[in-house]
Image 1 (cartoon, rainbow, N blue to C red):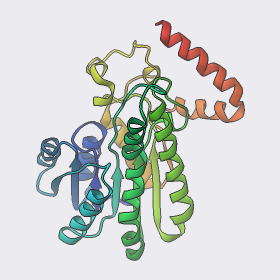
Image 2: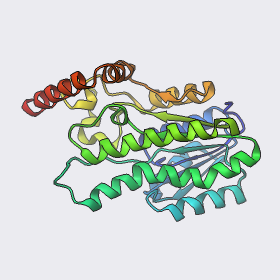
Image 3: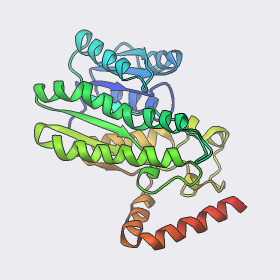
Length: 264
């Protein structure tokens, strides 16, 4: 898909990957970029960095009606959405100790938000002859996240939903890519993101911490090539193949990694 002259909506655009994507789409020649974020000030900051083709909106992606309203407003005042980037996310450690509401909140942000976006934009895209969805998941959606049960589960669900969309809507002109990076220098990494060192032993950082702009460029290439998986860390492809080839061996390896990280 060509990126020039497109109308693009980016969620989680206030910082990190979302900001890099929003700015990158503008550089690639988008006609309009809508920068949305839970933090309205950060969304406005991103839009101001881009310039006149950008606008901003406060958006809680856990609220389906808010996503519907953003899509309706964009299509009424700017034009049909060509590319919707469902990117917002957050990190939270824990597992069985977390209550159901905390698991559900992560599902709301990492999975149900993708569903809400697709419901809102796909019918219009189909009627106009096509469009594109870029959904941010994580390498955890292909592998796992040792220190966070709800993160691993919600990101797996995000990958599965993107697969389903691609299978069922490709013939109607809808392209789908799913972004599955390991560590990226964003707010999710917390204080570690401020350091250029890759020597920390956290699971996601073992293969290096990438800059958001590098990850955004990988996304643009995937969209232009209409390629499903976006793997800025190439190691993830190898790990995913090992998992598929011998699941029990992979599980044992992950247990060893968990023990190594716990003792670091």
